Amino acid sequence: MKVAIIGAGYVGLITALGLARLGRQCVCVEKNPARLSALRRGEVFFHEPGVPELLAEVRRTDRFSVTDDLDAALVGAEVAMIAVGTPSNEAGIDLTDVRAVAAEVGARLARADRYVVVAVKSTVIPGSTDGAVREEIERASSLQLGEFGLAMTPEFLREGSAVSDFLNPDRIVIGAADDRAAEVVARLFEGFACPVLRTTLRNAEMIKYASNALLACLVSFSNEVARVCERCEGLDEETVMRGVHPALLRVRGRGAARGAGAARLSARRRRLRRLLLPQGCTGAGDVRAQPGARAAPACRCPRHQRGARR
Ligand SMILES: NC(=O)c1ccc[n+]([C@@H]2O[C@H](COP(=O)([O-])OP(=O)(O)OC[C@H]3O[C@@H](n4cnc5c(N)ncnc54)[C@H](O)[C@@H]3O)[C@@H](O)[C@H]2O)c1
Image 1 (spheres, helix red, strand yellow):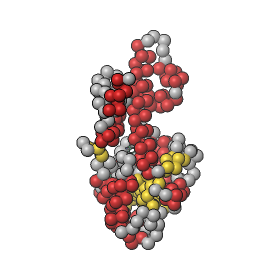
Image 2 (cartoon, helix red, strand yellow; image 1 turned 180 degrees about the vertical axis):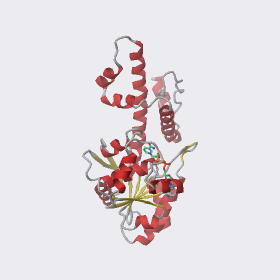
Image 3 (cartoon, protein in one colour; image 1 turned 45 degrees about the vertical axis):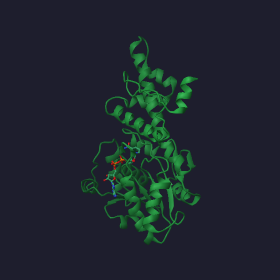
Image 4 (cartoon, helix red, strand yellow; image 1 turned 180 degrees about the horizontal axis):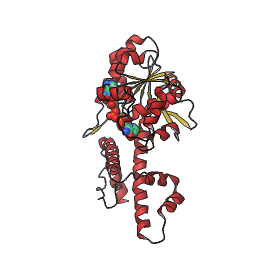
């Protein structure tokens, strides 16, 4: 099975390498010339343990290649996966690159004369795949949904353990517009020994945001527990965390809420808040990113105000 992955950044590249290791035929499409030539030389342009070794391994097979030629990448591909960046901005998230890729793929689908599933791997707010992405594809291809497939497969990689997270996932979420598209994506991920959740596009999109928020809460909570452990004699932070829940040890082990990790978590919370803002809700008070951080004021939306009065 062949997949074209558009955007060979952190997520796109690791996804391509992981799927190639699993036996899929993967072509990465990258428009950044510096990244493209680095990958062609077999060099990885970001730091992530295990990625250079995995790249070296799959380059020895004929299952992985990189190109800037989308036409060539799509020849024979059953899935076109969008893995470009979706930076946060004041309005929410910036879908410019996702829209551009959807339009570029759509223009090729018009000529493809066969069924291809466009799968969004980028993190997008609920409604984006069925909205912006579908719109761009239909406009550029003059096809209707159903003549092409639409899917959303969120990525749960954690920096520092991304390769092992990809190769040993604890779950795979497949959001799809219909069963036909879901079947194709399920075949792409066949071989992983973990539960597979098939759902709608919007649920899949929301699962990613909710997972990010849960991770942020876990990190904040583990920081609070660790602070108490540090102050009381005879407490062993690791044992306490392990006893409460193994997940706490994993987030703590990564030191995620310190330094650069803290900034990323704050960004995740801001993203979730922006997602809720159109409904007039900023969340029920704040979860602190770091020990000592100031809590944000409680939300003034009608729902939370009712809660506060109760
Ligand atoms: N980095 C993470 O830890 C992580 C984890 C899970 C999900 N995500 C999500 O995955 C998505 C990608 O994240 P990333 O960190 O890999 O981004 P990135 O910016 O590192 O990579 C995106 C790549 O897409 C390329 N690109 C953009 N437009 C293109 C086009 N038209 N054709 C070909 N290539 C194009 C860029 O040059 C870049 O190399 C984002 O939505 C992000 O939120 C990221």
